[in-house]
Image (cartoon, rainbow, N blue to C red; front, side, top):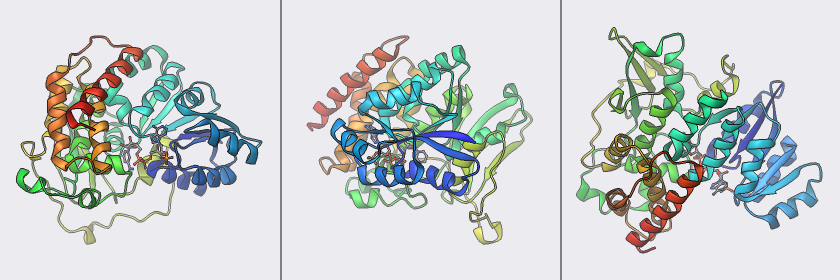
Length: 381
Ligand SMILES: NC(=O)c1ccc[n+]([C@@H]2O[C@H](COP(=O)([O-])OP(=O)(O)OC[C@H]3O[C@@H](n4cnc5c(N)ncnc54)[C@H](OP(=O)(O)O)[C@@H]3O)[C@@H](O)[C@H]2O)c1
């Protein structure tokens, strides 16, 4: 029986992880759960899964839930998440938090040499160098949950890394594929939230519309698979059937295909190195029709280019890009700015950024806080 701690259990990945666990009660038990503000859903989850500990966004909610569930130990805030990651009993920490809130829990788990199933890509965008340096020291394992990285992880199995020529990260293109910069100026929040293939949390859905999500995945892939930026190519594939590919030194390309369903990569991370039998829908290529591939339009969707630029510039450029993006996406979701302001803000922040070298966790947090202030002043929010 594997003990799973699910951080961000009330979100899109969190609830899908609990679906997998629910379907396999003989294999998994839940040892920790967390929410920020969705306390009613967290309460339902605690009632069903009886975790030993749970984290809430604030102390008052933790106090109320502790009265209702005396068997569960409650913690709260960023410190509570950090504590669960460092000290709770678990075999796998599934980090499904969104944004920078995921960095410290991943860092604590990796510092303690534990196993992390990582959905929170912002961990590796903001702190990839630090996490990998720490992982090398402790021998901790990071298993990818993002579907593209899970696909690459699967395509790499059984081969030597030195024989990899490049990886091909597929991208759906998001809801605005084919639009011009001029057309993007008038898109609405509702249109940006209407992703053609995946149903996800609001932040990643907006990141998919700007292609920042794909840019973040390029950075995530660099750290997960120890690649150079020029070994990571993005290919737009609107059908989202091929989840990503690896090209080897003899020209052979290995691809992982499947229906767009996060249950597959989540199961693969939980059950690694084995596969979990499930009754999900199967891919039927006869009904799928044509699979198409095209070049991403980085002139219109500049966020993808920003990610490559930040990755090549190194130091704390990716940390700053992540922080500015969180502020800008938050402002767009709050109806305070237009869609194109997100990209313009990131451009300005990247130009103004004064990077630090060899940043430790404290320095990354300082850069994050400082960059948020810069982005807020640019956007006047
Ligand atoms: N959704 C997908 O299909 C998908 C696919 C690949 C990768 N990912 C990645 O997985 C991560 C999670 O995405 P998601 O779509 O599941 O997000 P989501 O639906 O917004 O869920 C985020 C979870 O984190 C909690 N949370 C948010 N901000 C927090 C904070 N500051 N402190 C503590 N907890 C906080 C939320 O709690 P409340 O519910 O209380 O707000 C919720 O449980 C992201 O990094 C995303 O890029 C997602």
